[in-house]
Every structure is written in C-alpha cells, then in structure tokens.
Amino acid sequence: HEHISQLIQFLSKCMEDSPHLEYYLQWCLELLQSHGLFMEKNRGKYLRSFRALFRVVQSRFVDLKSICNDNKYSLEFLEQQANLLLS
Image (cartoon, rainbow, N blue to C red):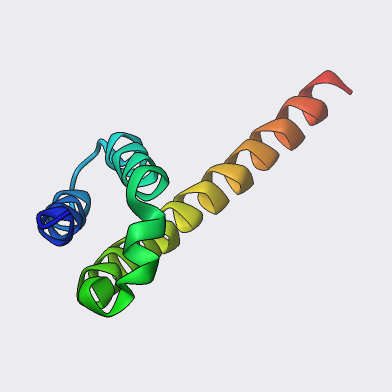
C-alpha cells in the first residue's frame, strides 16, 4: 500500500500527453477496484494524488469532448451533403 500514491502520480503524468488514454484509465480503474476501500479509509494520504489524477482526466475529457463534437458536426454535414446529392 505504500506505493499507491506514487503509482497514481505516475499514471497521472503518463496520461497528460499519451495517445494511450484508455490503457491508463484501465490501470486507474483496476487500482481503484483493488485498493479503493483502503484508499478511502486513508483518503488524506492520497488526496494530492487524486487531485492530480482528476485534473488530468478532466483536461483530457474536455479535449476529447471538443474533438467528438467537431467530428459529430462534420459527419452531420457530410450526411446532409449526401442527402442533397441523392435527392
């Protein structure tokens, strides 16, 4: 249990600019499922690491949301153009 905080910090750092976001999120999920109860009981010890992890996840969420919205609008435009050609 002594290295959990360091692992969370490491995962946070890796997620900042990695294209393998799902991989690191899966690691976080497994970590929380395995050690979540212990970490909750000792939450003060892990607060700094959780904040770092939250900031990175929130930042990546905002980036991905923007990309997804752009893709959605592009697909809607292409669909409209295809419908115009077919009619």
